[in-house]
Amino acid sequence: MLAIVLKSTGKNFVVKTINGKILPCNIRGKLRLTISKSTNPVVVGDWVEIDENETSGNITFVKERKNYIVRRSVNLSRQNHVIAANLDQTCLIITIIRPETNTEFIDRYLCTAQAYKIPAVLVFNKIDIYNAQQSELLNNLKSVYCNIGYKCICVSAKTNEGIENFRQLLSKKVSLISGNSGVGKSSLINCIEPDYNLKVAEISEYHLKGKHTTTFSEMFELSNGGYIVDTPGIKGFGIINIGNEELFHYFPEMFKLTANCQYYNCTHTHEPNCAVKNAVVSGEVAESRYHSYLNILFDENEKHRT
Ligand SMILES: Nc1nc2c(ncn2[C@@H]2O[C@H](COP(=O)(O)OP(=O)(O)OP(=O)(O)O)[C@@H](O)[C@H]2O)c(=O)[nH]1
Ligand SMILES: [Mg+2]
Ligand SMILES: [Zn+2]
Image (cartoon, rainbow, N blue to C red; front, side):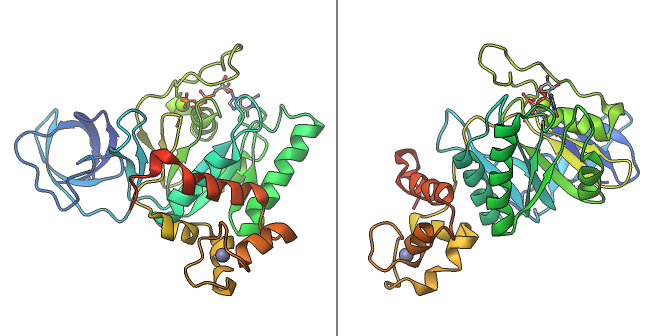
C-alpha cells in the first residue's frame, strides 16, 4: 500500500495511506532504497510502500525523491541531515526582533534552497511588535529580497494580519516552514489550522531567543489542500555540497552579472573589473548579500566542500 510519511523520529514513523488511514510504522528488515545511502533513509514527505496490518505498518520501499532539503547537523558537521522530501516550496520565517534573524542566515538558507531547486518564499512575522525603526529595517530587507525576485509577505500570528495571504500561498502545495527557534513557525500553522493545536513557547526573556519547542519535523494536512511541514528551529545553517567555484550560481542577482566579469574564472573577491563588485559599489547588489557570499566562501567550517 502506498503512503506518505507524516512524521519521523528517525526510528518510528507515522504515515497516511492513499486510503486515508493514519498508521504508525517502522522499518523491519531490509529497506529497498532508490536513494543515496548517505542521507536519512526515510523522512517526512517521502512516499513509501508499506505492508500493513490492523494497527501498524512496515515500510518496505521508499520511492525516489522529487527533491529534498538538507542541513548540516550542528555537531556532526560532516553529516547531512535531510529535513524533508518532495517539497513544492519552502517558507523561511523571519523576525526583526525576538529573535533577530540575521541576513547571513537568510542568505545561507536561500542559497541552499536555490541549490536544491526548491522555490523559497520569505515570510516576515510578528509585524505587530515592531516600532518605526524596526519596521523600516523590515521594509529595507523586504525590498532587497523582492528585487532579487523572491516572494515576500508580512504577517502576524498574533493579530492575524496577512494570514489570508499566507493561507493562499500554501494552498494545494507541500510547503516546508523553517526559521530560527521562536520566530513563530508553529504559531503560524496554528493560525491556519487551529485544530492541530501545536505547542508554542514564550521567548526566553533573558536571551530573547526561542527554546526549540518543536523537536521533530512533522507534516500536517491543510483543510484547503496541501501539506505543511513544521520543523525544529535551525541554529546554524551549513551549505552542503556546493563548491566554492559554483557558490555564486546560487546568488541569482550576482550570477546574472558574472558574464560581464573580465576573467571567466572570476571569484568576485579580488579580481579587477569584476561586474559583481562594481554592482555592489553602485548599489545594484545589496552589500549584505555580498558579505554573505564572502563569509560562506571563506568559512573555515565549510572547507571540506569541494
Ligand atoms: N507578538 C507576536 N508574538 C508571536 C507571533 N508569532 C509567534 N509569537 C510568539 O513567539 C513565541 C514562539 O512561537 P513558536 O510558534 O513556538 O515559535 P517556533 O518558530 O515554532 O519555535 P521552535 O519550535 O522553537 O522552533 C510564542 O510565544 C508565540 O506566541 C506574532 O506574530 N506576534
Ligand atoms: Mg515550533
Ligand atoms: Zn567577478
